[in-house]
Length: 438
Ligand SMILES: *[C@@H]1O[C@H](CO)[C@@H](O)[C@H](O)[C@H]1NC(C)=O
Image (cartoon, rainbow, N blue to C red; front, side):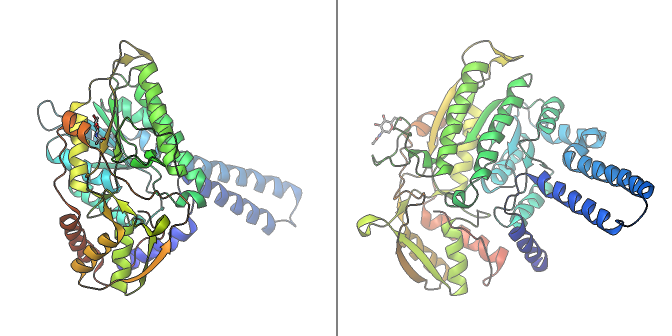
């Protein structure tokens, strides 16, 4: 278990841009070709031509194998059957849901909850290494123990998506796949465009062409409120001043989904999540990396806003978010289009899913100290202007009215469950993520 994890950490350092898996393999094929030529530089021209042909074939084959990373499944009837079985609801009038980002934090929890109540679930995830992929594999194993099929594939693989939609008649798509994180965009901006823009459009194209068209529920973000300083954040507040590329791509997603709603009659529900946390969470989040550092006796950096004001977040527990996602699926109206034309207006909804009680970072730390029974070594630093907003606070009255959404876990109780999971998974001496987000 530990060695496996360490292996993946080493891999992680190499694969900073994981979301285009093909790239790595093309480069590998070129290296092989180069070595081939170097070895046999002194032989006769005829022999060289023969070698050239062999090399050409070899590189063609390796190109093929990369093109069909996911498409290798496409001809197997056993795989087709698996997709259909996993997508089939086990209860009358159950949903059939394609969950993207199903190896992710919210995606895995939602997949399990849907399956548990008898809905059909097929998961899709590209297992990129933005954070420790061994955690994603642990979530995959959990899904697999519950007989949920999780496909290793990318949203930008058009062939895979159209194959999936032709195999299974999904009633809903729960689109949670995304490049997350606010500060990582400074290192790898292209990854945000690849997943959150190109991947989204690729998915919507497949959904629009599916017959019947599924309804789409997808994860936007509270970060779209950006520099909004009116509190609490309401859905009708302005969202045209994003403070990070992540927020800008999520905001773009809201506009892009609106277009597909308008032109093709797709039923769209966008969920603005407020700092989701809990067991099996994302290691790049502050509560997670603080836990790791506190246990290791290492100092944690606490950012403080202008004029010494503490940063605060409307931390929302995973089970509350899952209930909000499922309620969104259950109440999503139908898409109205077919064959690329809509036959009438379809719903377009946006909801805040938060907890309505912002907690400051120092309070977060003191709750962690209490549950971990260890004092944190704190380093307090002025917040750099690289994407984090000073506070978030959700107005959830719309979700309460339309989804019967009612968060029931406060930060104290939620972190207790997180810490219990963390220690059972990593032990009391452990390592975690690399970049921290609030
Ligand atoms: C919360 O949002 C609702 C609309 O969903 C709005 O009517 C209400 O005024 C908002 N409350 C506050 C305190 O902003």
